[in-house]
Image 1 (cartoon, rainbow, N blue to C red):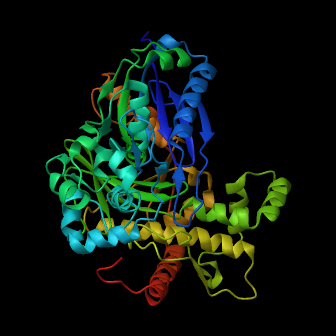
Image 2: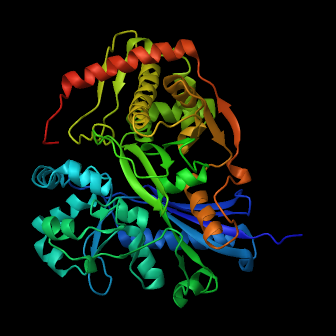
Length: 507
């Protein structure tokens, strides 16, 4: 009998850090997680403590290894998934000079506008795959540091992401996988290198202040002894550097080419597919990031995914806690209980879910949420359903943009926390008029990281579905509901355009 090997997928997110142990077939054995504390003391500033994230990573790794009861000698490798678009500065000794600015940090809007206007944002998009007019991207964050923290900018030896910080702490090298490099705004997709013109002309730095770019399958060994001892692992247990969390989610739910689409909703949301060549949208509605030498990932992401339901839960906290107690259910089931009582279209209530601005497809930090059509007969259950529908309209707007450039086909493979909501999945199927497939995988990014480790370390010879990736259920669309949603979706777009007309060159 073939010996069983195990692989750990590390997934560093903005709300939590997870370590998940999988077997050869991709089935989850155990998981450890720890929440991250978001720092937001100034409007538009969203940060994490690099030291706290690193400590959490070590702790969940240790807990995962110890609680699994799997022999440590059977752990064949680890893979690393991490959230994207973060930026921090470190000194020559690797000590943080700043907190970690995350994707939601919008302080650099003025810098993003300046870059877009003075350096032809569309030409930069065609080079980098990034819509640089939005402060999501580290190119504008780095410029903000230069203008607002000149002493820190001057002292900084490196400008890096949180993954690079963790890898440097564990292995003593500054390395960045090609995906995380390509979602910074200063990496040239066509030559596969940092773009020297962007670095010099826009940022005034040289590439030695950035990490070395490596393939996502790069294997790291020689874990520092203090950390190997802490984890109880040999220092030669290999770590595969992995990729960004969205790209790893694609891999983890079996979206290996353009014949399928990944749909993710956690705190945020995203629609993605894998292509054999870089693809760019003439309207810059979608992004394009590198993965392998012959694979790119295109798609779009929302700021406002599960965050909208979290806001509702916190806004009506006492009532939700009471309902959860009465129903004996967790949060998504409570949402389902109430939303399921309201017909498609929420009886005329439309919720534009822009609680913290938005990314794809319109890329506007200034937009804010709105309810339209609210009347005396509406109640909390209508607001809940309208919010769920509103998020799905935004997800569909990304899918529409992708259809025009990559022609993605069914099925849509769902992953993330929202797969616990039967009502939300049905809303998506009806809005998209597509089959939605759900696999047994609950931690798609972590599985993608572990799976990439299996491939890089020779346990799988090529990309093909693991047994755990196969769909265990599917949701079929209802034609009647789709017709209702199509009308409401078009109405929501009209409302949006009437309140937020295009800004032209300044965004």
